[in-house]
Length: 228
Image 1 (cartoon, rainbow, N blue to C red):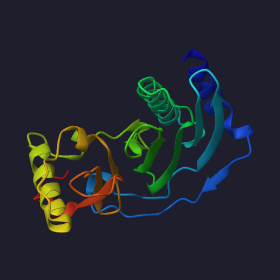
Image 2 (tube, helix red, strand yellow):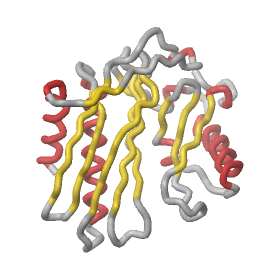
Image 3 (spheres, rainbow, N blue to C red):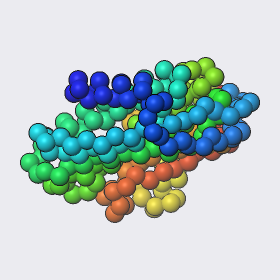
Image 4 (spheres, rainbow, N blue to C red):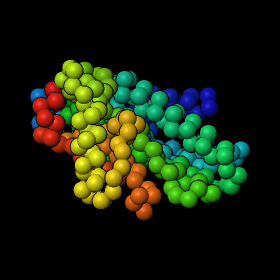
């Protein structure tokens, strides 16, 4: 995987000289004072690459974001890409079939001077598995501070935000799909920050006969004053 990591690192460093698609900035006004915006976010550029591995018989088709002169953001993207590829290649070793593919594209959820929130979903197509596999490696970033935004940092000190979020999400899942499922700590790790909400993703298969992850939003107003 050293070649893969080197390739991704070089791509991030050189993206300004490559042909790229530019995502338009969004000037949203978060309801939270901690993330209140005073201006637009940085320019987010798309980098893409495809690769075929003839040894393990898989194909990568990836698009991911980059921001010039924001090394913390680019390093986080680079790290997530390496983890995603490592996880995928480890998974496919349990199958003897060829034609394995991992594809990924991202969605810019919000882009202000305080919040750049990226939804990055990876889709695995592996012959021999019963359904497609999905993974999220989202990025939440504060361009002004040039640092990542953790879920914990969004809540007041001492608040049991995990319990509160799990309760809200379980209520929404039950109301929408009429199934009783448990929201886990892992489910809370993949989130994005919208203008007035947090969004999380959960695979409900086989309780719901659709393997694609479902998105559930928790409004800031539903957080009972726990939000900073």
